[in-house]
Length: 284
Image (cartoon, rainbow, N blue to C red; front, side, top):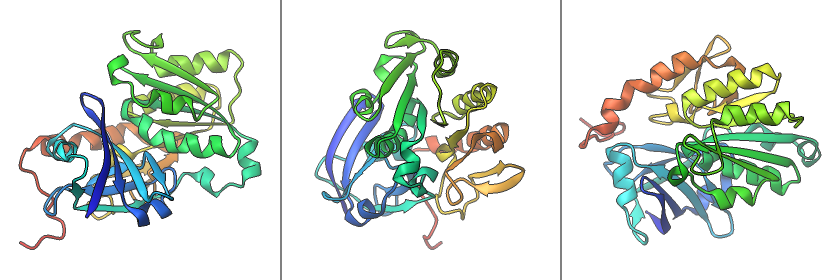
């Protein structure tokens, strides 16, 4: 059992939890994800790693209430336990294989939309701690839905906030901010975008205008998280890949976003079913 040491609602629909999972914390790297089950017969829910503390033996996850399973997870109280926290899974971010000297020579721009702020945080923290120059753009519909602003500000050189309604930061889209920065003379060697699929598609179209290398995370496609269900199949450079085992991060210019968005919409009915249970590994 995995004890919940801290629980905090970041906004009415988004919950942060720090969970005791020493072995996972020792092995976790930026870009990877976990499989969480609230109860022994609950659904397997893939969640990206928001943070990890090897000394404390904890991992931090951020969950948005979308369907029945996420609602159950967010209903667990501080001091109670989750049935399973499995991981780390997936491939770590490519920059984790680079030397400190290589990282120091790069200038990164992160574009995070909505819940995508959570997986961006450990990546920006990792790079910033190693001496890289890091800028971050975060976007949300309104100020109430912005999360981890102070934490993000602490792990970057410049933080830019965009909201659709102008209630925080600048009014407008993250793509507009990216274009404004590049056209204003900012020079980046690598961009990383994590957020809603449609946002990443348009960030890709924007970055392409400036020949800016871009990586995106397809973590929102994952269902089972092990490659067995096939739900996260996506076409990358004309080849079939699985977001959970081959990714979740890919070269943005090789991703078939239209196919990925069609696939993402296939399971909305199941997500909302109140009594949905994971049947994988359970006898008939």
